[in-house]
Length: 341
Image (cartoon, rainbow, N blue to C red; front, side, top):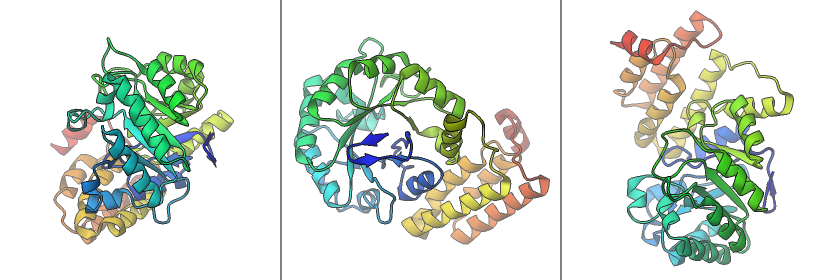
């Protein structure tokens, strides 16, 4: 798959997720098989460019190319300025957010709320493409605002005419958020209607589902978000399955322990100890969710205030797992909660 001048190693892309797809997570997913990773969204409000959060979100030092930055906002001029700012600070691809369903984003008419104003969509896309002619601009969107207003086909045509070089579509409306099933038939319609690369997103949780979505939509690539949380090796599993039709052996306890420790080390270095410990908690929770004894472990983990305490707890937990065998043992969620009670 190719976006602008960048030929990706495969067609598997990490979805932008606020509070998740920071530089450590993007790098980890790329090492474990993703062809590209999109940053968590960066504000278009120039007053916030100097904030520590915005600086971290725009930090791409040492990151594998291409470096894709998602910008969010509702004002064409401000979004154009944000695109230029991020390109000046290392972005090689600019992605525009028209898919976020969060109320705090939609309440300021950004994210998927923009789908209710097609003329504004046109002005935004044209302004951003014109602002950064030297880099490709991509778009992430949804099927529409609600069941009665699925306008993704029109938005896709606007995107193509505006110079957007790839379009990612989450197969739900804004009002669905993450409920119900993703609709792949409408993504297939878009693929037939435009010539730019189409990336399918939504409910892709396994190698088999990835192949099914690619077959059903004819999409050029797939985008994976929540399924990669605590399971970044899903990209190599999907890549292997698409290439061979066979499954990789699941990772062993020792490898997952090592991956988690490397991830934590990157988080502590990136955020510093205070923030790093807080950010690490959710990742540790995702890595261990569903494992035997993990509910009690996760509850205790949330009380630990230091790097040393976190690492000791992680090492003890995985050491105990390794004593039980080389492979992970999962339990059902209700069993897990009952064991922790």
